[in-house]
Image 1 (cartoon, rainbow, N blue to C red):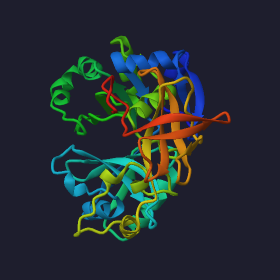
Image 2 (cartoon, rainbow, N blue to C red; image 1 turned 45 degrees about the vertical axis):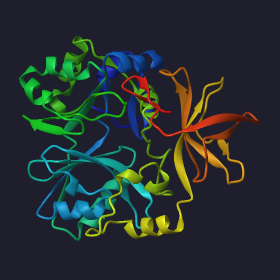
Image 3 (tube, one colour; image 1 turned 90 degrees about the vertical axis):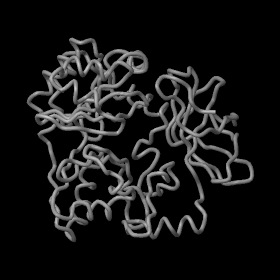
Image 4 (tube, helix red, strand yellow; image 1 turned 180 degrees about the vertical axis):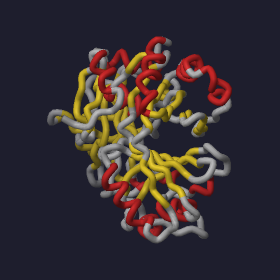
Length: 359
């Protein structure tokens, strides 16, 4: 048995299929993964993401600490509530984890992946020894993601006292009121909110959303939605063996002259030498499903590998992310059941706001 979120009983009562995910017992689906996927694209669905790790970074040197810890620069966060996506790297430039950091009224809040919690916290604590900061994990907060074109209006209806606050949120911003934090972020390629709520109030919020017509969705739909949206999954699309420059995350690295950060020297050297491979999107409109670890063949160059692949419910054909030689062009081949199948190479994402966006 794994760890359980405060909403575990609600999942069981709704008939969820429970699976292990990073040491947590989490819902895979509530009957139909495909139906849940389409619900998020067309109306609104909700995900229990309370297994994520929330850490408040506080102290006189919290800014300096995060400028050193992260590849992206928290100085970009000019206003309270603004959020920043970044990799947290080791000295070799490998991705220890990807995360979101929020500018809070006093200091900062970081949300990291559940499967990397122990190593993330250990790494952060090790680096914090050189700074006047305190790392405060927040297990008292649950987290519910409400996603889809109707999501924000549904949350406003349930939390009417905070409707005005929610309405003023810009994309990639989170604001706190009464111990709740409403963040206009997500992992689906749709608009919506990720709501940090006191654990004691999470079950009532979940039920209120259910009564408002928001459908519970599981990890299966969350994965197909994020892949259509071209969003990386830690442990599949990047890890400590690759850098952000090889993982479609170069845009998250801030190489300003006035700032050093962990892994910067390694990334500068890799850029100078030439980044050997890149993360791309693959599209297979013919029959077949692209799967993780399938071999990608690029004529005249070394092979690549699919890092994440699935059948796209929105597009009705298969899409994938793959790490391939940097010189890869617009087409390549994927080895499927002993055959080499031609695929199109595109720049992710594949789908945003319910529509195909790649070219």
